[in-house]
Length: 404
Ligand SMILES: *Cc1c(COP(=O)(O)O)cnc(C)c1O
Image (cartoon, rainbow, N blue to C red; front, side, top):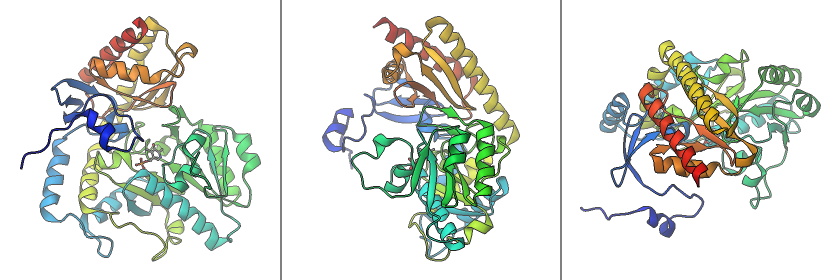
């Protein structure tokens, strides 16, 4: 059977216009290199939006996926399976958690977390304790509930009415949280580095205060670690460098290294409230996804791999500083580990997408986080040569934009 040839132009004909992909079609990848339909090579600093944590076609992941494909693909949750049980054990061993719920995306992991928070308070107090506190610029997914908890109004507009009982406060503002939290609060949810919102780090004092205020008001503390988890920030989960233990964390993105999977991790005490029949997912805990994720964890959750992520962070920041000394276009460098953002100066605000397009022309795949921030979320095992060459391309892309 011959396959019909397709190009980027077909996207506009047959795809809903909710995305506007770059003007090339990648067809193959290895490590941190990708090739498009024309055979042009790119260095990948986008990592599929912080997903391909072991790069493309990592031999251990490919081998595991092929082996599992030959055994069993799917069962549903009428049956359990070995990869899911092994993965859950490993996630519990590596974190504060005692129990795991599997699903297929970050949105679904957060949906489960928010439903659990409401159910937990319903079980222990009553239906009036249902309010969720979240933060401006946060991102928690695109389902109606998660988009409502998210702190970006533009993603909710046109989809109202949205679920009630959700408050958005300024991020890193301890006083605002102190004033808003009450006996009616069932959960406080935050990202330890706001990813989509512009790569904004949580203040350690704010995270500590959130824990204390949640304890005081009998509310659950949820960390959305969909983007920050699985080594991205230089520890296995980001909370492990904040000295604060949450009640729930959510994971997805890098967890599957590119194979769709999500997970919600929680304590024994909270888990009781997701009792039999209360929640579910047909694909959640799929053997293919769980087999791959187990290998992702084995590869990343090692002291030397995590330490190397912090060294790569330093390498990025050093070179970004040098680039900025040349062009003076960044006013701030933020992030942790290999989630790095640079905010453009006033004069270039709103133009982040221009730099992303120029980078692509120079052979670099990268990300933006809103209109003002360039974002880098490469493979966690990207080698030094790829970092150097990728940043050479960024340098050339900036020169190109400034020359126009
Ligand atoms: C990407 C992301 C999500 C949504 O994950 P999907 O897999 O796209 O549903 C949720 N929260 C955070 C912090 C994210 O970065």
